[in-house]
Length: 611
Image 1 (tube, rainbow, N blue to C red):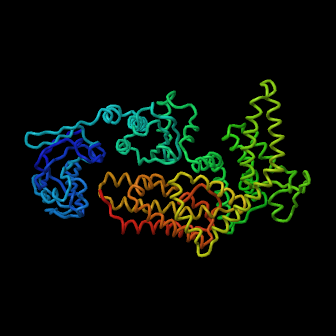
Image 2 (cartoon, rainbow, N blue to C red):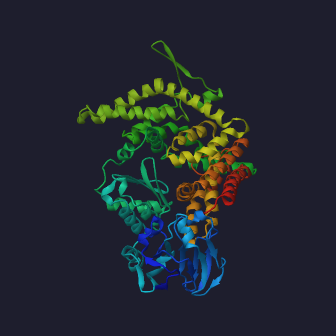
């Protein structure tokens, strides 16, 4: 790797970047270099090259040398607020420059009098391409070598995998493995419960190549790494922290949560394992619907096979829910499966047949009360509550049944009592509540003038930020089980693509090539249905893009409601979600175009990037 040795572009007192009172520069996040204290008011070209960026506020200038050095000269701290006052550029953006040429003048005395720190960082923004960076001013010299960890991980040992390097850097910047109570991950984020939050070096985390952002949510320190890569980093972190964390990871996370967050997390833990099956079912429905809309006729046997693919998961949905619930609450999952199958046993009247008038409920008299007995095909709440009850009941039996009898007594009594409670008490009560909730949701989503869609589309990503969005999983499953369609999915896809639109606008307006590249990489997952990198890496950081994206989501949600758009499944949105709307592609395109367009245009025209 090459070394850099250049003369300072300003006269004054040469100091190290660590002395700059701005963590973006002092931490090295922007790159290696030096700074000038008490500059004299003139900026000269330190090499031959071009003016890559001349900021509209004239307070900073970006240069690129003929041999590839990218240099940022940032005059003072927070001087962007002067909006160009006291600055006088002598060149234009794109100009070819020669070493020693006067580039910019500024009134140092006036800027100081206005209350601004004139310390001027001089930073090589692509410093990872160079070994040693040396900046001179008369007899003063500031020299910075590439750090040992950068050299060893990236250059000296090229066989070291990126995930190992990133995991090591994360541990170093959160206080070491001893500071971790628990670690887990989702689709894009590493989620940490830490013992001492004060040990976090946020600037250091942000500066790691591969990290797209970091934030606190749901009482967890969450580091955005992106789809796929987060799995690899998580595996390395777990390997490095083995034996140093709390044994009960789940309880460590729950201890830090609010009641609402705990409820949402419980819904997520129960329903997320089921979603892949329902996603596949929705895709099958979408493909069959597209084929039929094109006039393709299916034979009886082919149609029967396709119905097996699309109907089985919902016909036996209670079994999936009780299985997942028992697993979540510490019961035996296979008992949960059997209990769920009991709720849809063929001896009970089929719920769909009862709803269609082809069957009648069975009235059963218990202690003078007439209880309607029916199957619970497609029901969620009865299975959820029964699964919780059965897991607690099984634990209770295990607390006193002798080990020698446990294998026989505990499963038998758990199934027997849970079956009676489920069919005669929990089922009728929770099914009634479920119907009331579902009817209320339908009324809300069908409010006139698309108001329901507007509110859901506008607020959905705020709920995602709060970390309690898993409560919607049960709603979407209920919509699919009851109506065969998911109108909620059609509304939120516009909210998701709107976040991508706003983030893309910020990326395109950003002149710094390093930041622009990072922003674009954080934007792409939004078009695949994952908004966290765009939200926490870009939009929320600047606030206004996030607000403009909410407006775009509201507009898209209103369009989806007005067109009564609904998907054949759940769990995927935006580009992958297209497969759920094969019979309504034009309407789906409009909804996504509205969400993206409104957010992008508002952000691109109204938001001013400050770098």
